[in-house]
Image (cartoon, rainbow, N blue to C red; front, side):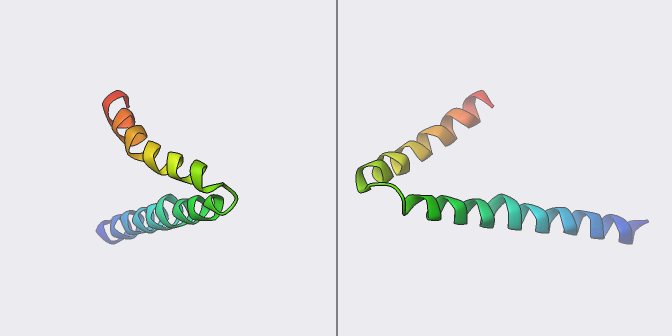
Amino acid sequence: MEESLFWLIYSYLVFVIIFGTMIAFWFYIESLQSLSPKETSLLGNLEPLSAVLTTVFG
């Protein structure tokens, strides 16, 4: 029972690392190539604000 729980937790961790972090960051970086520098800087400055608002209201 404990070994199967270990593999379940490990697989969830790998899923979050790959899909929640790496692929999302890759999509974000790729999308910046199609934006102008002005739009890119606005998006970069809104990211911390959206993180704070998500934390406060989420």
